[in-house]
Every structure is written in C-alpha cells, then in structure tokens.
Length: 618
Image (cartoon, rainbow, N blue to C red; front, side):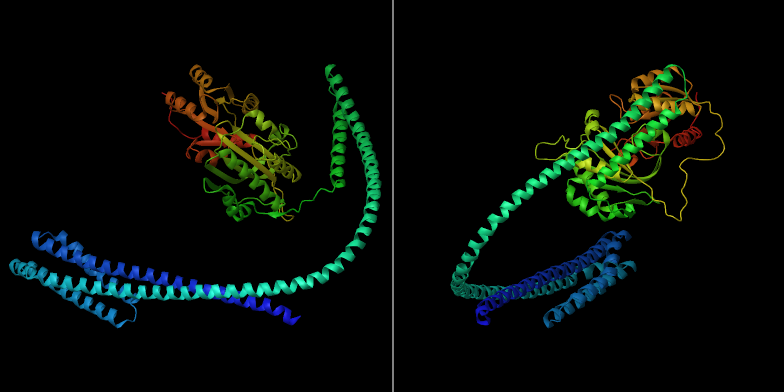
C-alpha cells in the first residue's frame, strides 16, 4: 500500500516545488517593481533639487537686473528648501560608491553656486552692481549647473543599469523555471499514467465484488419500494383526515367568533338607529371575540411550525454601520448611499438577521426602481405614534418606536401600486426579475415583531419606506410616557392655511388644528391655496405638503411669501427630512414637520414657528 501511494506523493512534491518556485519568482518581480518605484522617486527628488537650484539662480538674476526685492523670494525659498531636499536624497541613497561620489559632487557644486549667488546679491546690496554683474557674466554659474546636470545624468545611468540588471536576472530565472516546469509536468504525466494503469487493475477486482452486491441491493430495493408506497398511502390518508379535522375545527371556532361579532355589531347599529347609546357591552363582546380569533390565529401559526424569531436587544445604528459594506456591494457603484443616524437612538428587541434582511430587501427594491443610478438614504430616528395615528392604521399600537427609513430617488409608485405592495407574489418587475415576496416578507417580520410599516411615494418623486419597531425598555428603566404633560396651552387666535392634496390627511390635520384652538382654512392644491390666501388677509401661517401635483409645496411657499413677506411657512411630507433635503426639494433652514406627527408635536411646532419674530405686515 505504501508503494502504491509513492507516485502520488512524488507528484504532489513536484507540484509543491513548482508552486514554491513560482511564488519566489513573483516575490522577485515585486521586489523589482519596488526597486523601479524607488528609482523613479529618487530621480524625482534629484529633478526637484535641480529645479530648486534653477529657482535660486532665476531669483538672483531677476534681482540683479531689476533691483526688485520680490525677485529674491524664489531665491530664499529655494535656499531654505535645498537642505531638506538633500536630507531626503541622502535617506534614499544606496550604499554605492559611484552614486555617493556623484551626490558629493552635486553638494559641492551647489555649495559653490549658493556662495556665488550670495556674493553677487551682497555686492549688489552694497551698491557695486557692476562687479556683481561681472561675476554673473563670468560663466561660473553655468559651469556649476552643467556639473550638477552631468552628475545627475551619471546617477540616472547607474540606476537604469541596476534596474536592467535585476530585470535580466528575473528573465533568466523565469526561463529556467519554465523549462523546469515543463519537465516536471512531463514527469507528473508519466506518474499519472502509471497510477491509472495500476488503478484499473484494482478497479476490475472491485467491480466484480460490486456486481454481486448490486444484485442483492436491487432485490432489497424492490421490497423497500413496495413498503414505501404502502406507507405513503397510509400517511396521505392520515394527513387528509388531520387536515379535515383541523379545517372543521377552525371553521367551527371562527364561525362562533364571527357570529358573536356580527350579532354585536347588528345590535349596536339598531340601538344607534333608535338613538340609544348603551352599546358598550356589544362592542366589548365584539372586541372579546376578535381577540379570541387573534389568539386562535397565533395558535395556528405555532401548530404550523413556523420558524421562530430569535429576538435580541439591538442597536439599530450599530447594525446599519456593520452592514454598510454589504449594502454597497448589493447596490453597486451607480447608487450613492447616504446614512443619517440619530443620536441617542433607543434600543429595540428584534431578530437582527431579520432586520438586516428587511433593510437589504428595501435597498434592492430601491436599486431596481432607480435604474441606472440615484441616491439611497438610510435614516434612523426615535418616533412616537400617538392614539390618533393608531386609530387610522390597522394593527398599530400607540407608543414609542425606533424608525428605520429607506428612501430612494427612483420612479415612485402610484396609489394603486402602494395598495398592493405588501401582497404576496405581487410585483411590477418583469418575469423572472422578482418573486413579489420581498415586501411581504418585510411586512410579515415587522408585524410579527410588533412594529409597523408605512410607504410614502409619488410617481416621479421617489419612495420612502418607514419601518417602526417598538422601543425596548430595560427592566431597570422606567417607561417614558408618550404624551406631554404640563399646564394647559394658552388660548390661540391665529389663522392657518392648510394645503394637502390627500382629502383624508387634510381632514385629520385641520381637525387637529381646530382641536388646538386655531382657525383653519384648507385647500386641496397650490392654486386654490393662493386664491384663499388673497381672500383672507388674516392668515398667519402656511402649513403645506411638499409633494403635490402641478404646484408642489416649495413653489407654493415661494409664491405665497413673495406676496406676503411676513407669512410663516411649515412644510410637511411623508418622506424623511434628510431624503427630501438631499433630493434638492427642501433647504436645511426651513421649518419642517415629518408625517406622521402627534398632536403634541404639531402644537409645539406651530407655537415654535408662530412665536418666532419675522417682520410685520405692511
């Protein structure tokens, strides 16, 4: 057995020798390249030294010819820089007698030249310009410069010869290595032929034994297949019976719960129609039935053995920083990525791998929407979703959340597309370009983690997807109330013009402002807003959405302020502030309130802007 393995051992040894030799050759080539780079750098230092000498000579001659002190500036700079240049040259000078000798010649020549330049300048300063010019015309300076150039040319030739010698040596080594490699490959081929011949002989012996074993395995296989078919039929019958029982049980329980809900709602409708308002018990019964239905769904998910999440305490800022390289590789060079991380961000309790998958899904969708290029903005922020927001969004609980927003400058989505975006297998991508499961997976994870997902998008304006994950409260950390407390707000008297193209959002915003005591005038477009602004001179503040058809919020604000310079403006949008600013829609120094906002946030922003001094009406 040991002799049978010998050819393989020899073959591997030869291959190792070839690989090792190649590695040594590569290292030699790297050393040659490094030497070439050092030679180039050395020549550049010498050229710089020559340039300094020329600058000093030019400055001296300019001063002698014109008498202007400004011509001495290049001379002084060159004289002060020459010692440092020599220090760098000395540090890189090889211990070569010829090169050291030429460097010493250059140093002596430069010292002689500097002495002559200093002497002529001193003579000129003493009033003896004629003698100074005679020294210049004597040709000593030119002779010194020629000597310097000659020494530098000698150094260049020495360096070039050294590099050429190294290259010739490398070429010789590579030639011998090539010949050796061919010989080694031939030896390996012969060893392989010998090994194959011996292996074939042993294989024939093994095949005979395997054929006998195969005949027995075939007989055993037929028996196993017969048993598996019978067991599969039994399992299928049991599975169908279990599914039938489960379906009947689910239908029975859900029908009971739906009966309670429908009955309670019908009774409540009847009482309300008669003007009676004692319907609390019916609503309570419906809510209880709905809760039981939700619990049943949770049990069904557990029964289906869905893979459970592995939640951990997560710092979203650190997670995003850690996956920045992954996002950049996924999006490619054409997409510019901006990350805006909030300071003092709360912790969350969720599965970090699922968070990464969700962000990566959103980033890839954004990349596809942007086509040939664009800007992706990833932002984090602490956020509070209040009761009014929760009441208008299904399955959202009021409270404190950590928001992760992914914004793009892509083509955007129409409302009918947004309505179907989270549906499984719904996609607007071409065939074989997407499964339609990405956003549904994000939606399912966020919902399973107790969070909320919201899409803000307009055709041609890009898309922002906001993920809200519940804030994690440490057991030692008290829960911070979401609402503000304090003394009741002082009475307000201002009139506000609200401009919003979405009727439901416009209604909720105006109702909130009226609840705060403001007089409110609303408009559905920029043109209508300008008309109402002209009709109502008492308007103190313009509260406008940014993204609107025909005339967007920026254009509306510019026109309104041009008509009334004292008018104050607050912008709002579902897009994150940073995404809007970087997309060039909004400037940094304007007042802004991001959607969704609580009534407390709205009240604080309105007072903050209205109480700011900004001119007076004429």
